[in-house]
Amino acid sequence: MPLMNRLEKIVRPWAIPNITGLIIAGQIVLYVAYVLQGGRDAGVDVFSKLYLIPSKVLEGEVWRVVTFLFIPFSLDIIGAIFGWLIFYMFGTGLESVWGTVRYNLFLWIGFIANVGMSFVTLMLSAESVASNGFFYATVFLAFARLNPNYVLHIFFILPIRIKWRALLMWLGYG
Image (cartoon, rainbow, N blue to C red; front, side):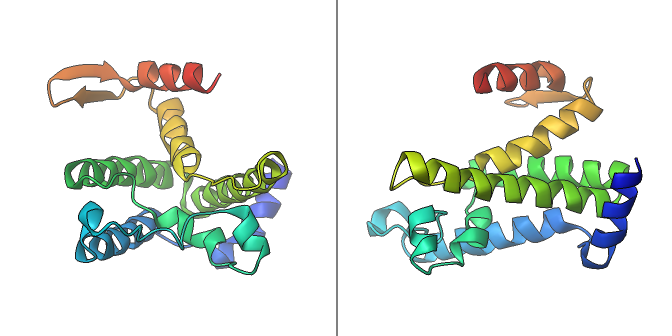
């Protein structure tokens, strides 16, 4: 535990309270930009300059290292809203249990791992595009680990314990 205590002292000045809300706010801004551009009907990918494409980062488009986190979960309004609500619930739940500093540290490590792995995949494929899905999945899996008996209602009807949904996710990753 001494390593964690030292990391906490280092991270504490830069820890951002309610970082989950800030990430969601960024996604909402991008979603509104997507809708104002005409959405799918416009034929233009609003997010094309925001995806984490390691080859583009190496060419000088360094903003992609951060902006990919703000690409919305879904481009469907209902899916986006539910994604934001669930991510907010999971993120704030983890922050309330772990504290702001440890939750920020968790997210930063996940972010660095996601970016790092995107550059590893660059060696395998020249035009690889990294997703923010794994980053958000870690928040879900951490929440499921701390609250295994929490019940989610699929379609507001079908109750399922979060531990079973997490198990399915782990099997899918395996």
